[in-house]
Image 1 (spheres, rainbow, N blue to C red):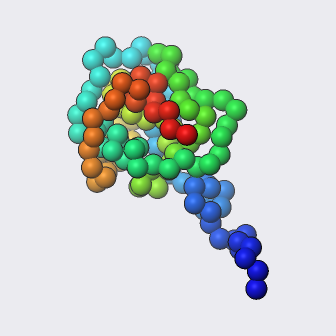
Image 2: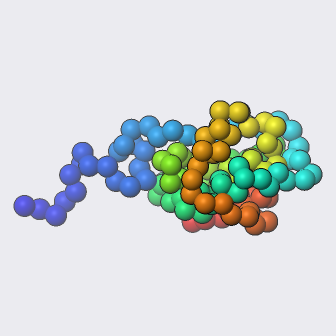
Amino acid sequence: MTNERDPRQARPGFEADRGPRPRLLYIETDAARDENPVIDDITQKMVAAFRQAEGTGIHYRGFHMCSCGAHSTNTDYVLPSGHVTNSLAIHYLALHREEVPAEQIEIVEAFDYGIAEPNAEELNTGMQKF
């Protein structure tokens, strides 16, 4: 018996091992950001969920750039719900709410991972979580 991992066994955070995971808040914005962030229960639920997220362990050569200039980190994150998102998820909900598809807002609205107030970094450029 060896200590090697069975290659058929999923490794935490690796999409390729588990098959496709549902993706959340990968959007392309067109508008400038709202001057007044929307900090409601939906945004606060995403903040709490994102703070519990784990990086996938995969680092890309690039990053997501929002139409307003905010940019993501170079990795994706697995939320407690199992959805994969990027570090601009909070930014999109707070500053581009009108551009977020209703079905994606409904998914976040159903989260039950607590609520938390976003900090300035999470609102403007995404959480720099490595």
